[in-house]
Length: 259
Length: 216
Image (cartoon, chains in turn green, blue):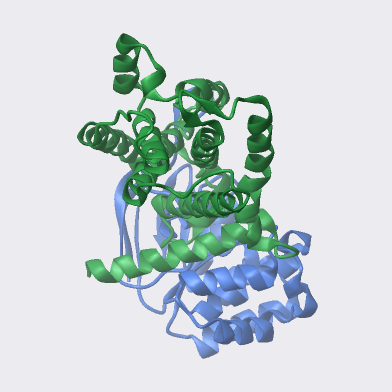
């Protein structure tokens, strides 16, 4: 029974993902390859700029690596967030088919962003490696684990943004400044090690993405800096955020009027 | 069988108040039964069809079903305008787990859209959309079809074919049809649910129901 409904869900989500790729990228020229190309179009010029204007090493850490591990998760965060805004309203027509649930729509859109994010990490990483700009991760499991937690964080925020934005249009207005403020705060630009002690304590407490940033960078650079992360703490925090997001999603349908 | 038990539907108005569109609607549709939903504009016909199709959820009450019910076949909903007919068809075949080739044959035969199938649905005429929606739902094969006005958008040939499909080839299927057109209601349905000011009553005498509807 449960297995059967899981299979239905998997089929529906796959169909939604294909449909989403068609509607977003069309069927002509690159098509779904845009999924990979789109983040790269953003990321590569930014990375090139960084390598021109910043010193090669700061505090003994290669800055291009910092930018690379900083910018791509940021893009994933922004894209998942933006895709969650009013995601039911813009897809209301899908609710005509009873086996399509709100969580299926969310899952399809988010999975597509995650895949696109991962693919662009792989492609840009390979390009930078071949150019000699970065070394392969010193600690692959930690690098992956960092990305796992980063993804979880983005999905939890997506659920909350998605659930809230269907209730109030204010959320859409707030999202823009929020995603800009996220830029300096999130851990894109800095390592926890660089912060003064009292500020670092606070940052680790209240900036959830700082921990996975530290893990990803520690995985990439190895022991050249001291990484600060607390896996049980963020596991708990992300679980709570996910739960809040799912609760907000649960009765979202009451707020959506389908044409 | 489909049974609704006292379903109500409220909508929030701009002023923040609640407006009850449907109030305490109860009726049963048995296998093979064809029932019309009559009511003036704004009486809640489309709302009822959407609730039966699970597009929206009732505020109160329950809907029991032992039959598979189609999505509401109307001029809006169910399709993506930017996608071609073929891509919409592929998507629907996937989510209903039907082989694309079978569906394609059925739809091509019935809707006869030819080369328009590879054009975006938003460029189609109303009649073409009606044919497509109807043909696709027939190809998926449901026990009960929910049809919202769409038959009247088709031409004579389409109406004749629709009648043939639902009565000769699929006589055991049920139909819930919202329509304003007396001749369509007469040729498709044997009973009617008349909606007025949120209330609903089922009449087994179709002519009586039509008369009451005309006097509303």
